[in-house]
Amino acid sequence: MNLQNKVMVITGAGSGIGRAASYRCAEQGATIVALDINGSAAEITAQQVRDKGGKALAFATDITDRQHVAAAIAQVVAEFGHIDVLFNSAGSTRLATIDTLSDEDFDFIIDLNLKGTFIVCSEVLQQMIPRRQGRIINCASYCGVREEYANSAYCAAKAAVIMMTKVMALEMGQHNISAVALSPGNIDTELLQSALKTRAEIEGVEIAKLYQRIGDKVPLGRVGNPEEIAALVAFLSSDIAHYINGENIMMTGGFVMS
Ligand SMILES: NC(=O)c1ccc[n+]([C@@H]2O[C@H](COP(=O)([O-])OP(=O)(O)OC[C@H]3O[C@@H](n4cnc5c(N)ncnc54)[C@H](O)[C@@H]3O)[C@@H](O)[C@H]2O)c1
Image (cartoon, rainbow, N blue to C red):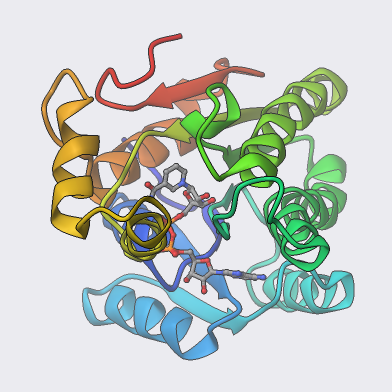
């Protein structure tokens, strides 16, 4: 996969899938712009890329804040001139059954996973449209196509990300911009570890048993790792994948088959 000369914005780049994708895409030659609400975590990612001889900048950016995102994107364009690829990885959940989910947690989940993804796409598309070139990869989830206990708002938000991405592909094709959703299965990151901790409390089960249980439900017998998703992100970012458009690409080890 050749990502030479590609400027790539990655949200949630301070941890998990976003960090692994930053490393993998930098190895393939991309210049990485690491955005994360946790600015020091994003800086660690960028520094690691630079230490290995790559090019990277980090910005402390809350993707739910339009002005924050607009300021970061303006700085990226001032520094690198353009943006070729956007990978929206920032996302999270708060587990609770629907009868106990607070309005505050519902809003948090929708704002982060759906509206935040929308805000970054809309700011980056302003830069891509005049160049008639661009690729959007939005991280959704298997939860966008399959129900999950105590995760209603997240499932709804990820289903909406999948559909928003399809409409984006439909609208942006005329500008030579393609868009895909990427839906991981259970991947071993901080998000999974913290979700397992809460789920263990809700279900009264040990974390180790839960971890084993989710692995056992996958035909390959294990959860995935962020590097596996990162390799797919690198492929989807390359020119040879540009014609894959409007799809929801599942990578779940066979846990969910579309
Ligand atoms: N890990 C899994 O099992 C799994 C499964 C399916 C989908 N996903 C999705 O993959 C994506 C990445 O998840 P992960 O597992 O790497 O999680 P993670 O918690 O390891 O990383 C998420 C990153 O997003 C950042 N972030 C949170 N809120 C933000 C905000 N408002 N603005 C900017 N950055 C923010 C966090 O600081 C963190 O660095 C998410 O969209 C998640 O929903 C993960």
